[in-house]
Structures are given as structure tokens and as C-alpha cells.
Image 1: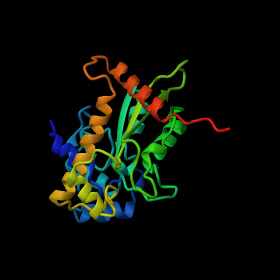
Image 2 (image 1 turned 60 degrees about the horizontal axis):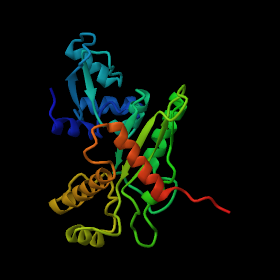
Image 3 (image 1 turned 90 degrees about the vertical axis):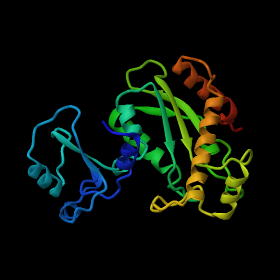
Image 4 (image 1 turned 120 degrees about the horizontal axis):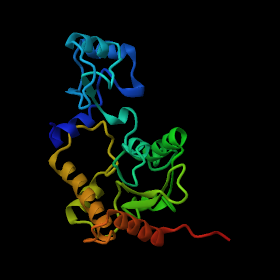
Amino acid sequence: EMGLSSAAAASGAAVSPNMGEKTSQTVSIAATIFNARLGLWVRNPRGGKARRPLLLYFKELCGQASRDDEFVYLSDGGHFENLGLYELLRRRCRYVLAVAADVEPEAGPDRMGNLGTALRMARVDFGVSIEIPELQPLLRDSETGTVRSWFAAGRIRYPGDAGPSGTFVFIKTGIVPDGLPPDLLNHWRSQRAFPYDSTSDQQYDQPQFESYRVPGQLAGEAVGAVSLPGEPDIGVRFREIERVYGSRFARQPTT
């Protein structure tokens, strides 16, 4: 068994001998020898082949940890794909919610970088597509620094399905222009990078931590408010979120 705090800590283990597709044998050897790791070994829930601990150590040293061993190594999911969206689409989930709190430059090709990477990988590997009517409301305005929406929604299409296969809801870090509590407004006005601080900053103080928690709560409440609270059918709620977002921000045809 693993607690939520332990799972969250493992998911952010950016420094590890094994880093998915970013694994380097030189780094694996050095990190293993000097015990430079933030991830952890856990017993494989699927069983796996029994290995002697020393053998697992040498497999880590060579960057060859396997999901089929008795123990598996958990580290930062961002070593492959930051949103966790790829695996959900591989499993053909019908209702998917993803949250992004990544760094975003004021302009340039890196905007929506994590979402773009995940969708491209899913389309290439699985033939899955996600259709979102408009993403501009999630991007900050160059003059005001605010966004028009906490979230976006669209349709998932899996290959082989005749019609839309499911609904995708995407929440992204941002600051909306209205309804902010005074402490959040103060932090936003005094910290230029907020809410897009570099993920290399691992030492949040109490005001910074709280200033990131509050937008997450507000974003969740914004999604919940349009999802037919009290409706027991999760599919109906997701489709309502998609309908509301589409009615608010559907791209207007040009003439």
C-alpha cells in the first residue's frame, strides 16, 4: 500500500538513474553509484520475476530497469509525458480529466507544450484524436496577463468507433480577470512569474504554496459548477461540461 503523499512525491522524482526515454547510461551509472535518486523501489503489483537485490542494483546502474521484475522503480512521470494523458488514451478511457500546471512563456511555440506533446504521441501511436473547439481562452492575454477560462473541453475519437468516443476536460493554470480573493490578487500583482513559475523552484514558501492551491480550487469549482451537480451519471456531467464550453467559446466562422 502507498499513501497519497508518497505517490505524489514519487511522481515528482525528477532526479533518477532511470528517466524513461531520457535515460542516459552515463547518468545512470553516476547517479546509481552516488545514490542520487528521488524515486523509490516498490513491489510489482503484478508479481513479476523474482530478482536478487544486487541484480536490480546492476540493472539500475545500466539503465535497464524493467516493469516485469519483482520490484519496479517509480520516478517522475514527466520523463515520458507530463499529463498522464497518453496512458489513459491507450486504455481507451471514455471520460478524461487532465490538469496542467506547467511553465508557459508569454509567447512562442512552447505554449500548450505538454498538451501538444501528449496529443501528438497518442495520435501517432494509437490513432486517437481529441477535438477541442477553441484553446485560445486558456492562453494568457499579452496585455492583461489573464485568461478567459480555467478549463476547456472537447471530444475524444478512438479509431474504430463510428461517432465520438468520449469527452476530454482540460484544466490549465491561469488567472481569470474577475472573482479573485485579495490575497491571490496581491500575490499575482507582486510576483511577475506567477502562476507560471519554473518547475525548478522546489522551495515554495507558505504564501507561494497557498497562491497555487487557491487557483486550483477555483478551477475545480468552475468545472463543477457547470457539470450538473447532483447528477449521478459521470458521462452526462462530462458531456454537459463540453456543451457549456462549446457554447461559450466556439470558434466563430470567418467571412
